[in-house]
Length: 115
Image 1 (cartoon, helix red, strand yellow):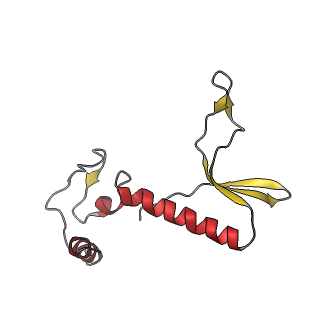
Image 2 (spheres, rainbow, N blue to C red; image 1 turned 45 degrees about the vertical axis):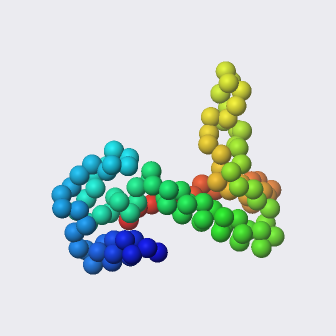
């Protein structure tokens, strides 16, 4: 962790103002950077957000593999298709667990939630 990251996290935890005024986020341009930096720590457009998601997904895959449960990550789910395109209209499942309950498969979608 860099010194800048450490200071930012420390200020966040101690509720010390990080930004002088509420401003629009320069990364996503959609949300407001609040004075305490809540959005700055959880902006979906920052690389760390995707990294944390993938890290949790990979940890879940490792747990399933060690438990002997068959699973695959980033698997296309083809049960909802657009007839004109002939392909799935859904994003791939983060984790597809084979034979979860009664021989049926389970799609797991991981979602990062900002506090």
